[in-house]
Image (cartoon, rainbow, N blue to C red; front, side, top):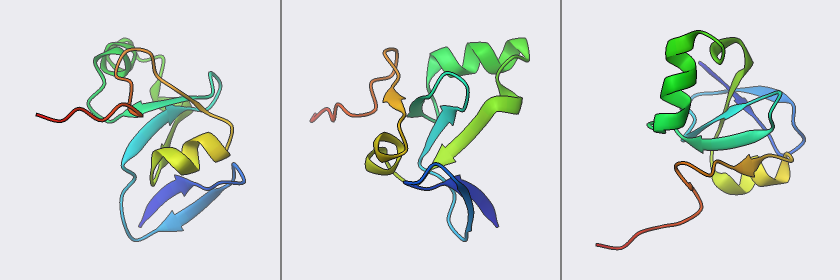
Length: 78
């Protein structure tokens, strides 16, 4: 079971893992492979405030903004 944050900002249990991670206090979200988040996790300052979302629309509805480093709302086509 995975713990995700819903559109109302409250956590709920999900059978599927979150597609995006976020920071509860800073109210931002980004990709799970975001280099900015990885740096903060390595320093030990991020993990206790980490939350997960099913998608970007849910994160935005819950009041979170996209990360400026990984820009999860921008889809690149190759």
